[in-house]
Amino acid sequence: QVQLEESGGGLVQTGGSLRLSCVVSGRTAAGAAMGWFRQAPGKERERVAVIGWSGGDTYYGDTVKGRFTISRNANTVSLQMNSLKPEDTAVYYCALDNGYYSGTPLEADEYDYWGQGTQVTVSS
Image (tube, rainbow, N blue to C red; front, side):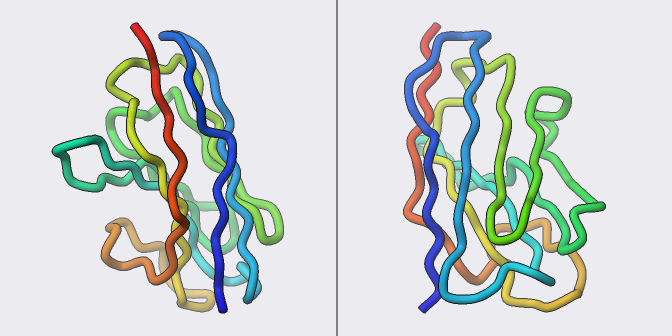
């Protein structure tokens, strides 16, 4: 059984930083794309950042470019979030693609496994 477990969410002030981590168990993450998505109340789930199987290709949502950095190591994917804004407040989800050594999906519905989510709240 594949499981993804996120950690690192919390409450932070505007301009602060948080680091999210996600650990995959039940299968190797090697060869698979991974990503972070978020969903705020009343809004659709949106891409924050995704990273290809090699770690060499990354794609960010327009609203987080230059502030967030995605990285991966073994069965872990991380998201460093700097210069946080109130509009970054959302539940953040980790996702894993079921493919092996294939392309990097950009849309949420292309990912096969999901974590339970971790709340990030940025106060103004």
